[in-house]
Length: 281
Length: 281
Image (cartoon, rainbow over all chains, first blue to last red; front, top):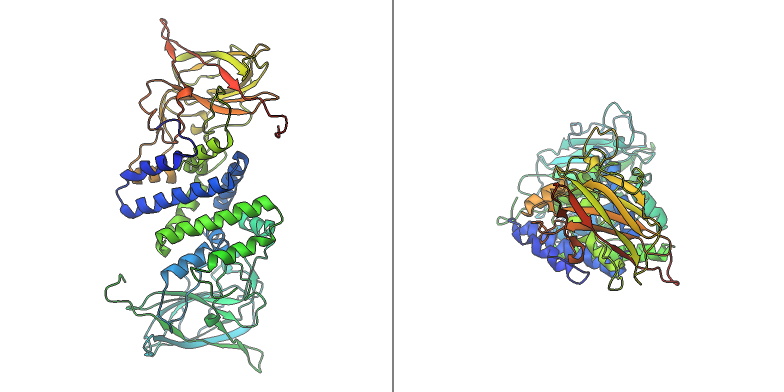
């Protein structure tokens, strides 16, 4: 295996992968090498551009810490995240559609009881969120575990503030035995994804805005159902047609109603997909 | 641009790139998105595998610092580096072949005069390295700038030691006006690339060894000639056929001769490619 040239190296690398014991890892790496090489060959990547790519990935890694995930932002803005969600969630019509997970989820958010305020002091117009979690057959799903998280009125998630004493605008609660849930939070507002890293530089270089339409994240888990990761968007948001992470589904856009007292009300029901008996839970 | 599915998202992402002012950046990103999506689609990447990929890239970035370049190791072991070198160095027959740059080059290595010892105390058998730098037409190239760097007898580059007071086994010198160069260093030995990071984990998971055959790095620069980045390998090394970074060219393998006093002698001549008048210098 010497003297490899641009016509022979790809097969040589793939041949090296033949010893991989895990067949799925072998399949993924083999495909990755083929597509990575095909990309480099198609654009005839120069050595200087290769080094710029190395530096871009390194800077992206250095921007990541326990509260910032620049590689998820990169995947989101290149459409890879939404592609992966779409490929893996071919649910029957009538189920709530999933969308991207995003980089701002935190394990171990605070627990709340139904009716409590998850805002925790985050800035924003008060909003009551309520609805029912149902199965595809229309029956309520009891006691589902609900994670919610969102940005504040300034467009920031709690993890984007350096010195917060506790989490804000995120929480975990359970629906009741009839599938009903209700909690207080703040009105979702449109916000730009963080632009102080390599992904922001990429958006600037491509003259694309960094904005996401206003949304509230939901992750809903109940035994016997596929986990649902989604958002509820606000109608009439100016970025619904140009979401920087390609995540908008029309079925997830809702009317956040302004009430006479100036607070808001969002009603949204979720429909979960039962796990197939033969599928892995 | 809503309700994108696995069949429509790639074109939507590419459409977003249409505003990119730099045509080369647009070309590269458009190709990257197509091949990245094609990879994900081909293997039907799961959401769990996507997250493993995010975590792998993040760990690779976190392993990088001013002395460690894990993304170059990743590119090297996936064959992307050698592919890039091969695509960009289509030199006429007779020129010295290039090979991979590797992750261990340092700017601002110490300067030496001809005949001096670049080892700087690094462990290894003493070795004299000498030769001539010529043009493709056979004439000597005067005063070329030569960067050399290599691992020590324990298989480590100086940057892999935490507390070295000064660089070892690397240096910068100039050939004389007749193209001749000579310096003292240590015998090159085979060594494993660093395996304590994500790339090491990948090699282990694919059951590939991490070894590179013994070699001495050269980077040679002279006005009017293409910069040459290459190695000189040692013949009879057991890893010549299985270099973990796919870098071996037969024309770069030389006889490092053992002399009666136990020291070594390497003679190797380099042939540079004149820059074409129409090409960028």
